[in-house]
Image (cartoon, rainbow, N blue to C red; front, side, top):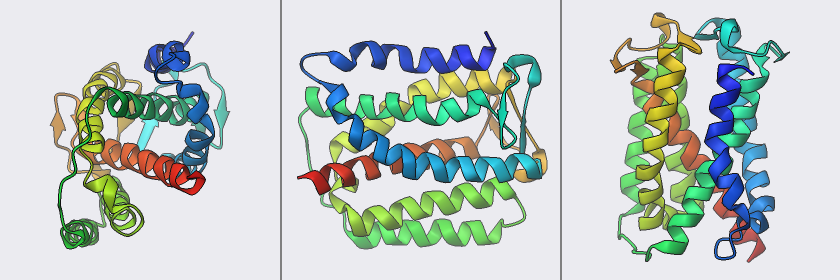
Length: 223
């Protein structure tokens, strides 16, 4: 079994076991999760395919099973299924076990953040990773501001993001220190937190946030 596959299994194993917990009943939420994965993970996989071909990052064959789809290893595809499964599980757990609090942040604030990120991307357009992750993060704030402002004012959402960054740091540390994934220094600023590129923080924030956003949009549509 490959190193990357083991990491993927460790990511999902606890949420998978607890999916049938009588309080959370997470398994009943799977249609909404699948809706989110189909939209968000597909977008990130397409970016991943082009970024890999362009040489923004690469995967160490010593830690893979050797099965590829469109130039991406099998483990990378599974990553975009197992991580949202686990992150949305954290979100549902937070919603069940903590009391919701509503902030009163104005839409204009988030539109300003979105515009600032897009301008930041334009300035550093020559760094492929910096450019794209800034665009995706700006896109999240733009979509959330117009489609679900309540999410941005939700204590549950922000607490979920805070908690999610703990496993993010652990997983990304192993992926970048072993390394399973290597980065082209010309694609980003070259600055790292331990072994993790700083852009990875925006990458994870935007991706997790978009999964939750589309998950909630699917829930709202059902209601």
